[in-house]
Structure formats: C-alpha cells, structure tokens
Image 1 (cartoon, helix red, strand yellow):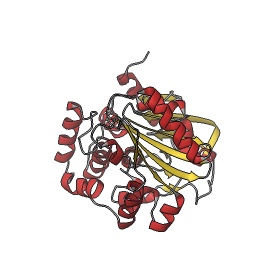
Image 2 (cartoon, one colour; image 1 turned 90 degrees about the horizontal axis):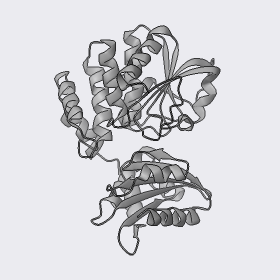
Image 3 (cartoon, one colour; image 1 turned 45 degrees about the vertical axis):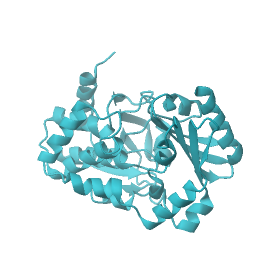
Image 4 (cartoon, helix red, strand yellow; image 1 turned 60 degrees about the vertical axis):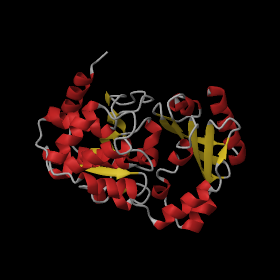
Length: 325
C-alpha cells in the first residue's frame, strides 16, 4: 500500500504530465470545497496549465473574496463546450457527490481524487486521500509544498479558509498540532485571520437567522435526551428567502445541547427526498451510520440523501441512531 508521501508524488506527476483540467468539488460546496477548488486552480496557474473550475450549483456569495472563486462555473447554468479527459475532484467523499457535472467528463476520463473523508473509496486513477487530515485544504497545502511553489496571500487565504471552516474555528477534535503550525505559517503569508473568522463563523444573513428560528421551533429530543433533531421544509426556505448557504451550522444547535450524543438536521428536499446531516459528540461514528443510508463523511460529521416519505424517513433515521447508541 502506498504512503501519503508517494500519493503526493503521484499527484504531482499527474499535474505535470497533463494539461487542460476540469476542477470540481461536491454539490452544495462549503468552505473547504470552495477553497480546495481555487487552491488547485492557483496551483495550475503557477504551472502555466489550462483549467476550468466548476460546481453543480452556484458558489455562496460570501466565498467570493477568494482568488478565482467568482470564476467557478455554475454547472446547472452552463453547458459543456467539450468533454474533459483530465478531471481533478476535491473534497468529494464519493464519485456521486460531484452531481450533474459528471456530464462534463469524457468517457475515457482520468481522475485525480484529492480528499480527506474516511468513506472515500479511491475512485480516481490517482488518489491522494488522508482521512486524518482536518480538511482537503490541508492536503493541498502539502501538495503545494511538494510542488515547490512560492506561497502568496491569495492561496494562503484560500488554504486558511478551508482549515478554519472544517475545524469549526479550531475547536473540533481534528485540530491537530500540524494544523496549528499550518495556520501560523499562513498568517505569516498575510492572511487576516480575525477578518475571516468574523466573516465565516460569526456573521449571519437575515434569511439565515429567520430559517434558524423556524428550525429551532421544530426541535425534538428522544426520551433519554441523547438524540436531538430539527427540520427545515421547502416552505420554510421560501418564506425566509433562504438559500442553501443559509443552512450552514444549523445542525450544531441540536448537537450542542447538554447530554445530546447525536444531533441531526433534516432538510426536506421534497415529499419523498430528505437530506440528513449528522453531528456526533464522539460516542457514535456517524460516517458509518450515514453510509448505511448511501451517504458518508467523518466520524463526527456526516450526511446522507434519503429517499422516502419525509415523515417516515425522519422516524427511520432517528430509530437507526437509537440502535447505534
């Protein structure tokens, strides 16, 4: 089995040997997904390579401060001009997470898969997977070092964004000594840490506050108080004028209740489709639990898209968590 260092070298060779890349992250991109996309774009620009960055949907406006973020194409609003043979997937726990962007891929596609999710099954021709990395941005930090490129404030800001958001502001258990050393190095490259923390962790849009209020009104706990969950419906989203980005962090509210082991956020997509987001306080491996429903993620943070009548699905998922406990 190859080492992480060998995987980084293979990734380096893939980037040097080929050209005209398509860079894609997962649907409904978060800070790590967007930062990883632009970090790869920056890296390729330094190498003089051609590339296109894309996501299934739009990039959250609050992420547009990053280098190249406004150039990431919306795959639902753009038709491919050609199929891409060389594809770089970042922060995608499984192949299906790239969404509808798959129709941009050539039949003989060659994928460089860069990810930190334990549930990633290595779907690339080349795979750089480090499941104990705090963020995919951490892996790309290492890749940039291996490539011998000179850091600037733009790429440092992107890397810091991915690390900051996926560690919950350096509060989660994935905040390793290595992460703190990286953060320190990135600050030396000119990153404005307090400004990013305010923007990404503190500020809320008014629709975000409104939809949070509606979600908390649905809060339920099991009799033993170990599982808590909230629900947001399409009607809630419409009434609040909320976007997917406004749902960021809602799952932490049920998880943060004293005594709760697993918090769940159910986003109702339609009468027959539910997106379940799980957060664990450590006793339950929610990545394994999410995998049972066709999803994936990390031991303490995972998600799945579940088909079935939504009320029954909520009950089914809660019962499954009860059994796990």
